[in-house]
Length: 332
Image (cartoon, one colour):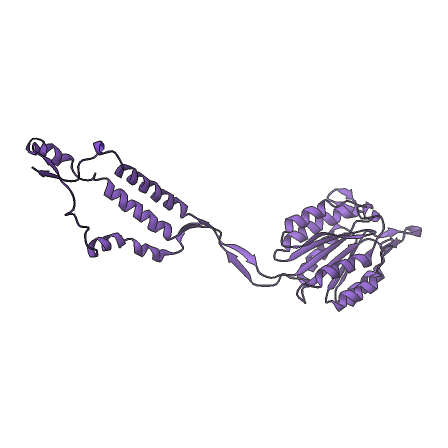
C-alpha cells in the first residue's frame, strides 16, 4: 500500500500566487483617507512596533494555498493488487435432495454419513476452487428449483448447498426436470462454456420431462452435462454386490454421452473427491487474470484543512478596529 497522486500535474499551480504578484499591477492606494493626529510624535514609536498585518498571516495563507493545490492533485491511498479473472465457465450444480439421499452408506472421517452430507463436504471444496467461474445451484427431488442463479459469489453458493435439506423438494427424483431447468438458465450464456454437473443416487421417478429428451435439448443448446452416480454398492443375494441399488447408471451414461460430458461413479468419499479433481481438469477456469488495486480518495483531508485555515484568516481580518492597528496614519 502507498500514497499516490491521481493528477500530479496539478502541482504546477503552486507558484501561481507568486507569478500573479510579479506580473499583475498593484491596487491603487491614493484614495485612502488618513487619520490626522497632532500628537503623532508622542505615540509614533509605539505604533511603529505594532503596525501592519501580523506576520503569521502570510505563512498560513501560503499553507492554505498549498493544501488546495494538493487536494486538486487528488491524493489517494492505493492498496495491494487483487487478481480478478475476467472469464470462466458458466457452471451449474444440480444436486439430488430426494429421500434416498438420506441413506447412510458413506464415511466422513471415522463416522458413517448419509449421501447428501458427503456430497456437501466434497462439493463445497470443489466450489471453493472454481474461482473465476459463474456458479449456480439447482436442488431437485420431485421438483427442481434454482436455489442460486449464476454468480461469482462462491461463498453464497456453498452456504446454500450446506443448508439444503433432504426431502425439501419432495421424496422422488425428477432428473429430466433438473436438466431442463439448467438448460433454460444456461441457454443465454456464451457458447462453449455452458456446463451442468448432475449428481444423483437414483433413477427418474417423477417430473414432466424424460431424462433422455432433456439430454437432447441440452445437446442442441450446447450444454455439456457431466453426471455423477452416488452411493455404495448394494448387497444382493449370497452377499454379492449390486452396483448402486436403485441407481440408473445406463440413463446417466446416456445423458453424458449425448451432451459430450462424462459419467462418474462415486461409491465412497474418496472416489467422490477424485471425481471433482478430474472435473477441475476437464473444465478448467479460462481467461487471463487481471488485477486491480483498491483506491481510497484522500483529497477531502487537505481540502478541509485549507478551508479551516481560510476561515481563521477571514475571522482575523474581520476583528473590530480595537484589535487591529490603523492602516495608515499621517502626521498632521
